[in-house]
Length: 63
Image 1 (cartoon, rainbow, N blue to C red):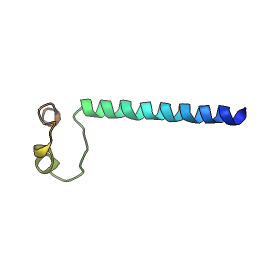
Image 2: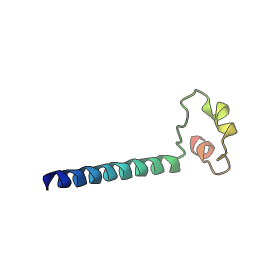
Image 3: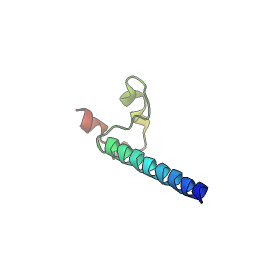
Image 4: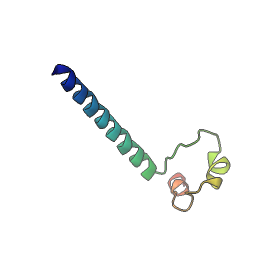
């Protein structure tokens, strides 16, 4: 039926959009852009408490 086809198309569009978002996040993360906080001076206010500091490349990318 058309309704079933429309639902499948909607789901496929949602999946495609989700994959696009994931790719964008992965690309940003690989460039050291985590944007978990929009605070000014976040490297000192947020990053020093982050559990991922040992693998984070933010200092390397911002240098």
